[in-house]
Length: 309
Length: 102
Image (cartoon, rainbow over all chains, first blue to last red):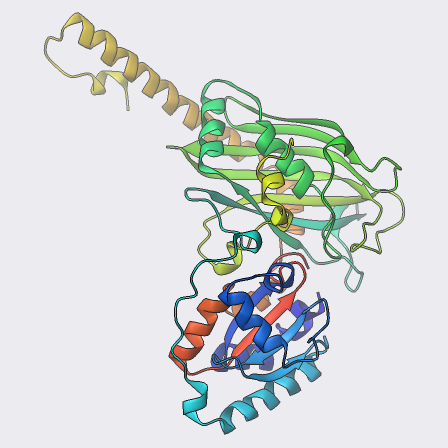
């Protein structure tokens, strides 16, 4: 949160990163585990940093294409980040060009255990989640400086066959949306990810569930999902519109409104009691790299694609 | 497009007319459904309250300012680009993708 709002929105940081660097963002959960050329190169860089020998490799790294580390920082303040960037640029400028340049070969096969790619013909839906509160008679985002104020971003992936099945369902007059799509939404996307990484819901935690589409593409549903001990949960309604044209999604608009409660291990700091939360699902054209990052819940891919198992 | 304009002129065999009529009937039904769907789509998610709350949930322009930086998501592609352009690489590495979550 601090990185996005304070550091990367800082005008001087933004200018330097845009003009002087090739910028890349990665999920450490995958990257530190990869047993392929990408993983080896990353490990080479990390081993020059304070993260050597540490389980997590989270942080901000500046390095050359040859893998020489020029700077590392895990401090979230813009001043310290800016200082690190300028120091690294100074080190970069001192390097002979012969040291900076390298012929980068193709990296060969990706470690499929820790690499995720949208299946051929698949489509991407952006999922935005935000904690809300009622002020002046309507639901609004939290007032500034309250934790969990930002809109969290995730992606729902749908396979080509699933989209075709949705289209056929609509044309045939509608009905319940398939388990594969329906439970994927429930288990991996109807959750509070506004303060960190949430855990996936288990199938037996889905207490009440309905999600259907009619013959015009109108979507309606409701849900109650919660842990067995009642400490964490989410209850609400879904409405929206799905359009499928020639086997491709033309629209996938859902609005989810409900109340959530409780913390998971990495999403501490939930508001007391049951508090409003809203989610928007919206079709993405996938043109930007940031639109193509995998769903948070696909770390175990078979479970994501077959959520009923 | 009306059904009449689609029908070919001239005589047709009984089989051709039956088959063609069926296809055209299905086409007309799909076009009607698509048009009705678009109208309902406009109605479902353009009620004032829905539009307001959707705008509350989705990121504002200010919240998205950090996306003005052109983030690559593939370290090897970034490495190739850095070699090609003679630039250093800035890697933002986080548990949970930094461009997702918060």
